Amino acid sequence: MVDLYEKIVAFRRQNVDLVLVTAIEKTGEGPTEVGKKMLVTPTGESFGTIGGGALERYAQQKCQELIAKRTHLTEKYLLDKGKVEPEAKTLPMVCGGTVTLFYEFIGVRNYIYIFGGGHVGAALTKVLAPLNFHITVIDERSDIVAGFEGGDVKVHAKFTDYIEQNGIKDNSFVVVCTPSHLHDYHVINKILELKLKPKYVGMLCSLEKLRDYLDATYKQFGRDIDLSFFYSPIGLELGGGSPEDIAISIVGEILAIHHGIKGQRHMREKLDGKSRYWKINSGKSRFLEAHYARHQEGDGFVSRKIIDADNMIGFQSLRLTTGEALMWMIHERYYRHDFINPGRIGPYYYNADLLFEIIRAYEEMIEKSVTPIYLDEVGQMELDGQGFDTIMKRLAFYEGESYIAVRRHLVNQVIDKYGLSDVRLIDVEEQ
Image (cartoon, rainbow, N blue to C red; front, side, top):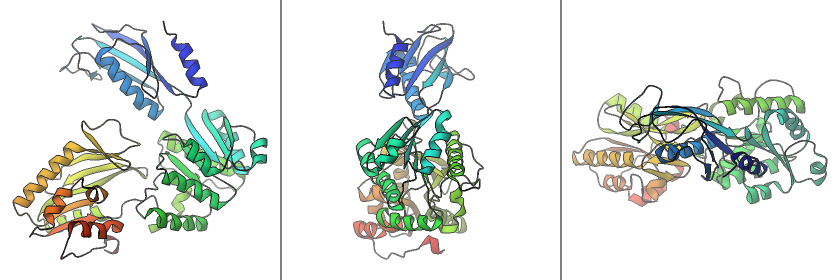
């Protein structure tokens, strides 16, 4: 017989996050009994049982979501396919009873990587100490690492070497406060280059240095790079300039983002206008939607960005003539198996079934000679022969008018691939 508590101790010694599932209530017939337990790891490995069948399979999937979210949950299930009970989720079973499960997340609140063990890094570690974060401090200076107090892991290594060799955990927090702005830039650009997925990256720097960094980053990665998770200048606007003041400001920002609390003034909000690098809506979709609203002619779909607290969640597809909007693309940080038939492009999952329906609608528009046709977010998918590739090939020879939204840095590639002629370029940022 497997001792689940011994397993928990062994896994936690290896710093592995877990979810312990316990049946806490049961009515009627069902495959489990109150007190039954199952332990699930991030790899999907499980120990113990809560009865098997659809209930256990669903619980194992739910555990993966909760490990990603690092949270607990109590949820009730009706084990009777086709029936509905208030406040219960129906599972495809025929037992007829109900079961309530408690999912207990076992692990630290989250992982924080501090690049730079100087004055701010040291003060930050002390403020974080009682908050149940797992803290890793990385520094290139051997004397700093040797004398550093606090933290769970202390690493003497070149900053970028550490990232290349160890990576960082998904949805973790990264604070960059190295002794050199050049090191700071290298750390963040390595995260972007490797397409790592932190929840937060904060960089300690002045507005002037930040602008220099942004210029260099746009030059390397293009202006469409997603920096919504990047917070610089770092911290909440609390005042004070000592290492301790700055540390409290940073921890306040981390806790606000961890708990999803809005309304605080972040230091990065001191930037204005086009300098707000986390604002990722360039206006292409708004232009298409506004153009249709003015003229009330034609048909098509536009993408509406779904943003929460300046974080990109995903896109809805809005049909202009009906106003119907459906979720069709979700960022990997927020994707929870939402689509039956998902596809993948960059950091996004998309609804392949919905994409097929939209393509079919465009084919009907072309057959009916609808004009103008509005087509939004043509880009890398189409250049790779996916997405609206077949529609673009037909629009290249379409006699009617069409408005096609393309990211600026891909315009020439799109024109060349589809042999587009009689093209009028409209820069929406100049409208």
